[in-house]
Amino acid sequence: MYEWDFSPVLAQGGFLLAGFRNTLILTATALSGGLVVGLLLALARLSHRRWLSMPAGVVIEVFRTTPPLVQLFWFYFGLPIVLAVEMTPFLAAALTFTIQSGAFFAEIFRAGIVSIEKGQWEAAKAIGMSHSQCMRRIVLPQAVKRMFPSMMERSIELMKTTTLVATVSYADLLFQANELAQKTFRPLEVFTVVALMYFVTISFVSFLAARLERRFARTGEFTT
Amino acid sequence: MAGPILRLSGLGKSFDGNTVFSGVDLDVYPGDRISILGASGSGKSTLLRCINLLEIPDAGQMEIQGATVGEPSRSGRARYPERQLRDLRQRVGMVFQHFNLFPHMTTAGNVAEGLTTVRGMPAGEARQRALTELRRVGLEDKADTYPSRLSGGQKQRVAIARALAMDPDILLFDEPTSALDPALVGEVLGVIEQLANEGRTMLLVTHEIGFAYHVSTRVVFLGENGIYETGTAEEVLKHPKRPLTQQFLAEHKRFQF
Image (tube, rainbow over all chains, first blue to last red; front, side, top):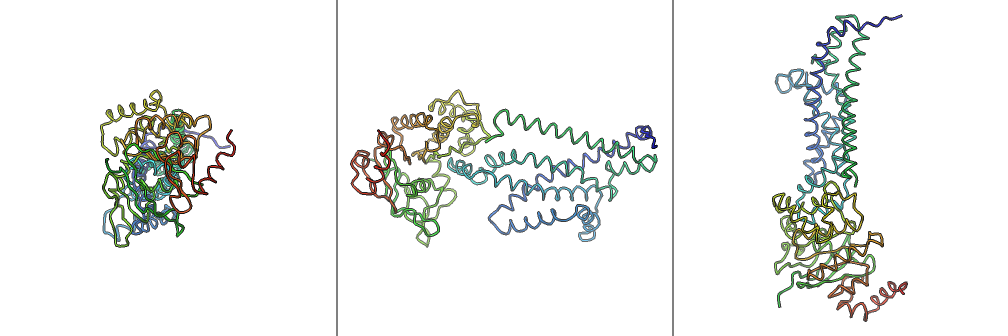
């Protein structure tokens, strides 16, 4: 019978927390960068100008269809060779996950934008708005609300995918957990605690998101 | 007498080679209230949508306050630069069949939106103006309500206030009561009638023949390819001269008592 003993893990709690902090920093960076990249890619993809929509389509497809681990290796090992730039684990990870999540966010943005009824564009144009004013004031705010659940889903996915950065020695939560497991010889306990940390964080964010959705619904702002 | 606010000469539109209408000539003078009637598919809505360039006409020309809209091009078909589209649309208000309110903005927000975003008016001033327009359509107390909480009739009245806020020279109504529950038609027609009494210039596509008769200074009946019969409400609706108009009116009166 296995005897669970969490005490060595808890004694080194600070070690895990440092990794947790790095995971949060990376996730937040990739998330905010990814939203910007995603919106730009979506707008380019929807453009009538082929020289904009074509390359955007290629970027989106490449990053959606290749394994994130391979992308991470491209950026970490490949890019310094091609461009002769210095690459840190954090920079490689931030770039990879910004563009990768950007590609997914782009498809979510695009779906959200095209889901807005033609009448909304017409009503906005009928009071004299330009295309970009329509997009900014009328279409995007509604699209973002519709996209909210898929965005949340994707962000949770992103947080979990960032565990891959342990492979390029970025000291995220999983990397630290590995180290600790080897030091304490308590891998089961260490990874159970790590799973719990992800569980609590993501559940808490989901809870906030659900509350926000309910608030939209209450004011009538969310429904059409 | 002052010149027309709007003059259409030889206006035409076709979709994929199918002519919707062609050769439409129409002068709209200040205070005119012109109802556009016709069988479905006769291009009433398309004509209206061409006037504020939500559809781009492919023949003829349009003048507003004496100034030609669009630029002639080599093909003989006018071009409409983005800038001109936006200017024209601010002078021609549009009310849609399905209201098309902005669901993420309050009622006052909907009405003020054009003023702030398009005209650059400060938010406070725009809100005051929005409240004035909402009062005009009897919905001042709904200023901070979102559209999803309004009835269809209330939504359409907000949409009218939204168009009015831009001080348009002409108001276009595209079947404003067709999407409404019968019990709610009256309140919207009431607002339109009140605007008519204020001397607003308007073009109205409608199936409410009785209302058209009551409110119009002129009636235009569209046939297969353009204007088929036109005249005063009395002439066209009471004593139609041409067979299609007569047939159309007979159809519409069949179940009246």
